[in-house]
Length: 126
Image (cartoon, rainbow, N blue to C red):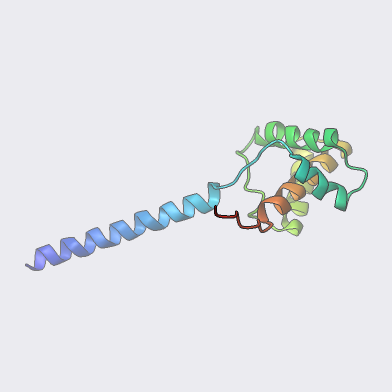
């Protein structure tokens, strides 16, 4: 009887660990990096009026190609704007981004971050 309880306790702990790892993995990887949408362009233009669709798309392309040469894509919603600024300053040098590329990546990341973290209106039930 004692062995059964001990085994049950081990199984319970193992199940809890698996569940926690699953939740942590989801939190670290559950995000979307996609081509900028018209809604995201509006977000960017509210912040940087001179931003156009081409420069936002260039930021997306640079982020999804050059920034992944050394590591995978990062969850843009996981870091604060201040953390992104610091990270981008360090990584731009390593990725050999020029000022325009760096600015486009910054605008893309911060726009995508705002879009992903913004509340969405509830869908109407019919």
